[in-house]
View 1: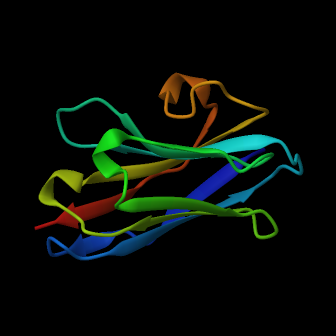
View 2 (view 1 turned 90 degrees about the horizontal axis):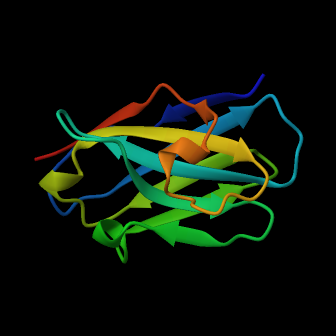
Length: 124
C-alpha cells in the first residue's frame, strides 16, 4: 500500500523560500513518477512540478519555472520541492502524488493514483 506524507509547509513573506518534502513508502519499483500539485480555495487542482524517477526528466508549470525546483532522492524515496521567490499567488494546499511507470502527462492530476494529505503554504 503506497503512502505519501508531505511536510515543510508554512507561512512566509513574499520573496521568501520554503522546501517541501514528501516521504513515500509501500513500493519497491524503480520506474515511477511523482509530482507536486496545489489547490487554492475555489480553484482547481493544478500541477506544479513533476519528475520521472526512471530517467529524471521533469516538467514545470509556467508559473513556477525558474523559481521552483523538484528533486527526488531515490534511496530515501523522498520527493522535494524547493520554492524560491515565493509570491502571494503561490498560496495553496500543496499535495504530493505518485504513480508507477512512465506517465505522459506529468502535471495531469488524473494520471496519479496515490496522493498525500497535503501541506499548507501561505505567502503574504
